[in-house]
Image 1 (cartoon, rainbow, N blue to C red):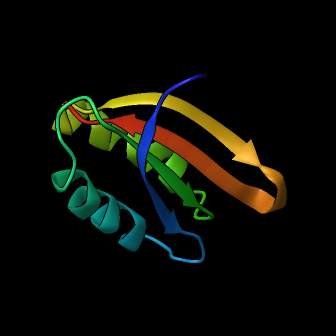
Image 2: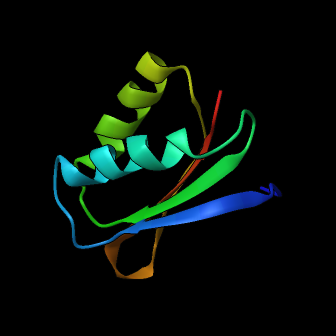
Length: 78
């Protein structure tokens, strides 16, 4: 996927609810249509983040798992 990433949010090592709290705060600093990359290790984020996107109106563009159990998400601000 070829998108311009405006900001990267590293929440590796944090567990629920901190990754989602930090994501919500970071998204407030973005303009509409900008993309945030989030890197984390909490497996709960894999189910929490799509629900949060549905509720907030933001778009989950991509989700993948990197080496070392790191999850990568690309979220576009509405």
